[in-house]
Image 1 (cartoon, rainbow, N blue to C red):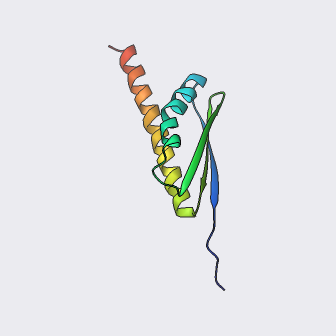
Image 2: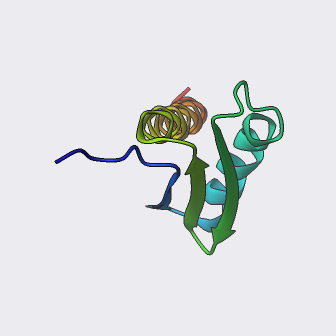
Image 3: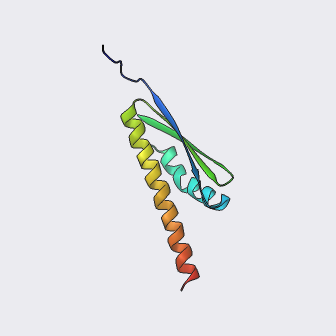
Length: 93
């Protein structure tokens, strides 16, 4: 029994954030990554519904999908930490 390679794969990441404002900030920060993807193996779109950030990824194979998911999750985490860092500093001089 042989398995055939997967021709395409997709995933939707729904990330609940603390506020609508934070979701919009992170969406804005990620738009350049969506507009200028470094590879043609995966493509993504990003939207916001209330305080939920939605990232839809389509890739040519599972490896590219995993890599894209890891990248977007890392970027969201980094953006969130950056905003929290600035917010904490401004509240406690």
